[in-house]
Image (tube, rainbow, N blue to C red; front, side):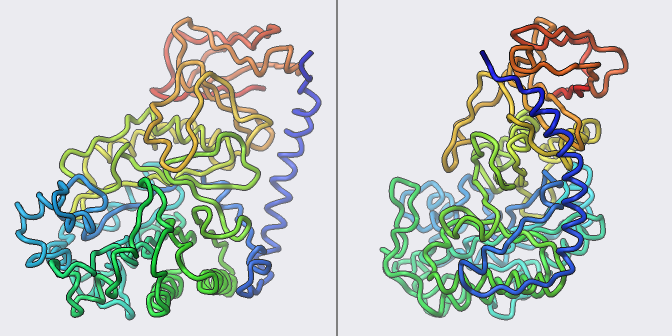
Length: 504
C-alpha cells in the first residue's frame, strides 16, 4: 500500500508559508552582519545563497563580442579559424584572407556595436519576465567588455569604444533587475595557437590578447569534454592577470551574480581561494546579497552556487542551483542560420528547472551590430506573456515533496539538453508558493482530461475543495480516484503553453 502523503503535505505547506516569512526576517538580519572570508575552503563555505536568487527563477545573459563579427556557425571561431581545414578556417580565408595576415585581433576593428542600445536590451529583458540579466564580460578570446586597466584589449580602448558592461549595469539596475556578469577567461590559456609560427598568435607583440607563448599541449581536449589535461599549467603571470580581471569587475560594477564558466580547475588552488575570498569580502563590505556560480568540479560544493551547462538536476536538489542554456539548441552566438528553440520548449524547461529548486539563465545571441534579432525577441516576449499570467507558480516558489510526474525523463550530464527533445502531454510539474500547491501541465491532453497520479487517493487523501485553472474564468470539474485526480479540461486553452492549476 502506498504511503499516504496528506499529513506530510499539510505540514509542509503550513511550514513553507511560515518558513518563507521567517527566512526573510533572518535574511534581513544576516545582511547587517558583515562576514569576513579567509582564503580557505572552510571559511569560504560560509557562503549562503540569498533569497532574491531563490525567488527570481529566470535570468538572461548574452554571448556578444568580437567572436560575433564573422556570423559563422561555431562558438569557438577564435580558435577554429586557425585550424587548417576546419569550416571556420575556410570561411575566414574566404572573407578576410590568411589568418597570419588577418588574425583574430584584426576582427576587433570590425566590432563596432553601432546599433547597441543598453536601454532597449533592458526593456526587452523586463518584458521577458527575467529578474536578473547581464553580459558576458569576457569570453575565451581575451577581449574585455569593460574599461580594463590590466588588459589593453577592451571595448573602451578598441572596437566599440564604449564600456558595454557599465552601460548595461546602469540600464538593468535602473529597471529593478539584478545585474549579472559572466566570465569565461580561464579558457584563454592555450585558446589561441601561440605555438604556431604560421599564425599571428605566435607574434610576441600580440601576447596581451592571445596570451603568452605556450606549447600545443596547453590545450588538450579528451573526447571533446575533458579540458583539464593541460601541460604546462597556467603560469603565475596568467593567474595574476586572470585575478586582476575578476577584481576589476567586482570593484567597478558590483555584479549581484558573478558567473564563471568551467575550466577554472586548471588554475592553482591558492588563486581560486583568493578570488572567492576577495569577491565575498567586497560584497560583504557593500552589504550586497551576492551570488557566485561555478561549474563542478572547479570549486568545492558549498563555496558557491552550482551551475550546470545545458543540463539540469534529475530531481529536487536541496540547495538552489542554476542551469545556463541558450535560446538556440546548438549555438551560443549569433550566426546567419541560427535556429531558436520553440517558445514552448523554453517555458517547459523553465517549469521543470524551477520544480527542482533551480533557476534558468537563458542565453541570447545579439547581432554583431548590437541589435537582438526579431526571432529571439519574439521568444522572449512570449515567455514574458506566459509569466505575466502564470508567474505566481514560478516566482518566489519552492519545490513540493516531489518535482513532478510523467513518462519523459530528462537527460543528465554536461550538455545533455542538446540531445533532449522536450516534454509530452502527460508530464506535470509541481511548485508551492506561500502554502499554495500548483500543478503545471506541460501539455494539453487530447482526451480532455488531465490525470494527476500523484494526487490520486492512493497517494493523497487530502480534501481538495476546488481547482482553478489560471487564465480560465469558469469552474473546473474534477474527480479524485484511486489512480489519479482527474481534472476536466475546458474547451479552450487559457494560454499557448504550460497550464497552471491551483489545487485548493
